[in-house]
Image (cartoon, rainbow, N blue to C red; front, side, top):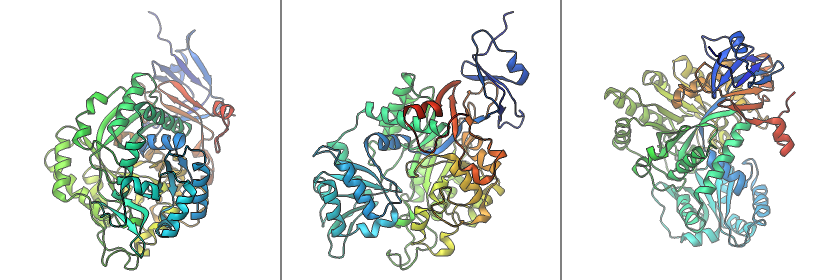
Length: 564
């Protein structure tokens, strides 16, 4: 009998499987892209054609998962758009716009971002619009804020979209005006979609460009050790681009997509059933279009998050303003019942506690109707009423969290200007959720966050502090989780929530050989050093898809560590 030999053999390392039945090992064998064996059994599978990697003591763990990002948008920003940090003040942001615009043709749109939510009031003036017009040099411009929910358009873009001082606010959005009634180009949510449609018509993006942007987004994710992720708001065009990449052998990640049921921020067409009807034709080996995405509310700084109790009375909103949901209970239930019957799960954007409660109430009805298998994610859920904490576990609803959106920073500071302090400081009750038995899954919401660095998110989960050190303070420290819990939030828990735990999330014989070689064992270093952990190598299905040394040789990247 001919002995089976491995394609790949890792030796002399610390291999952490994250599987309770399999201890750490010093060796792992891989065959046909799948984990084959560990320890001495793995070493016996070395053959003449086996690739042997000496880990020289390095720490290896399963590839990280990101349950909430917008990888194609991030790829577009990296390749084709202005990519400015949201920490810039207005002068700095305008300077970045002017420098970028000078690289474009006279009719090309200036697109990208990001401007900090806290700048909205400064931008909402005729003077600021005139400064934007000057910075863009006559070109049309549409710039996103840090939440990607709101836009700032210049006069040329407003003209092309036929938005004037008297244009009525669209449903689900606003066209902000100054004290004299002049439109300032600041567009809240659906207001920005009006200009997004003009941009799409005048400067369309091809499937090839989308595939290139998606590929670039995945390359960046690989550099942070991510091998599986969920795109949180997928268009049909993106789903086709992912299918094209996979058919060409270029989709080196497990990708779950969330088909947009509604949209008041991105300008996506078609929506809902118009995407779902093409679902199966875009499915491929590595692409699973298994969720819908519902935007159930907006964001607190814009006053569009739905809360049980009112915003601050002096925050510039109507008296006793609580925000509203985008769907009433009957419409949300129609969506969840109708998709559950077809085996489709749902990721639901909620940033206020009223929208979170509506999701839980609706899922309770769905479960009572006998639909036990669809997965439901409360996306973001920064604010959860104490009475609703236990319901996450009872209803098997996942808390999809993105730490960069709530630990001390630009966004949390903006939220603090519109909510009473005792509420603004109580974001993301992670400890309470875990203690109640809920599943928490980790995301980045990149490029709303500056990067998809899970180790910064893990550090934030454990310390409740800003991992970059730019913003002082600790946010609700009683809700901290342990390091081990935080790592599982970005691995096994996310795999379960995405529905890919059958193939990834842990290193078990028969699962995909998705693993990362790290600069450090996060369990053996001081907690403060965890935020600096980096991927030295990233492997997907037994193939190396990222190497820090190769990346440095090609183009030095800030924050990436060399192989020892």
